[in-house]
Image (tube, rainbow, N blue to C red; front, side, top):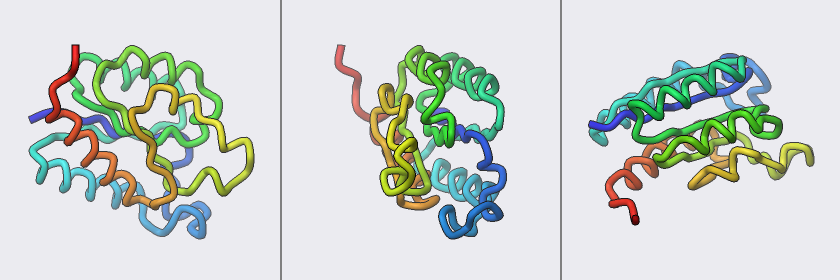
Amino acid sequence: MSLIYVLNGPNLNLLGKRQPRIYGHETLADVEADCRKLASELGHEIRFHQSNREYEIIDWIHEAREDGAGIVINPAAFTHTSLAILDALNTFEGPVIEIHISNVHKRESFRHHSFVSHRADGVIAGLGTEGYQLGIRRVATMLKVPKKE
């Protein structure tokens, strides 16, 4: 049983309350419950975290280096600003999937650039909270494939 980290950036604690027209009505607790159920069905365990503080996300990435097999990350606004999160992700050897609930490419131009994408093995955007489940499925698939040396 592998451990997959699901990391969430700023303002995602307001999911379901903040701009539901863009982000939907599901809460982060709903997303977590769905992720836990799916991970269990796939034979994996998850650690689910959210923070409005960049350093906490970095600390969880460092923690994942020790005991995590993969990371699914919705860095939210840190996507467009955080070289520090990119640097932390670059130290992680497992698969990384970047998630965005909204289609960032249909939004303001400053949201079109992602530092995290430079490390991510895949990016899921615009599929609502279902993107988390797709990200977990992808990490689970990637963990089955032997790494090329």
